[in-house]
Length: 74
Image: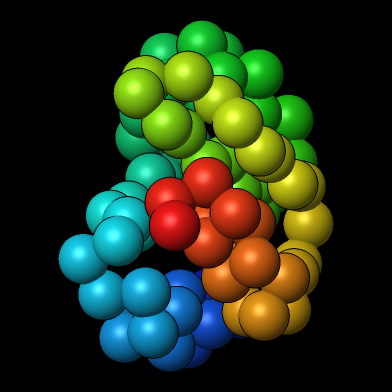
């Protein structure tokens, strides 16, 4: 979702090296969309040690996403 690009860029500058932010085009990577049961775009997933610890589908404010990351990485 193009609307979330500035939010993710801002978030990356805030969280720095605490977390890695990766954007995946589900049209080009259908196997990942299937594996993680992504049915809506955008979908945000926070992983810790390879396991899903939080997820959200739909547009979200950067502060909410930041809270989810900090909860699992601080």
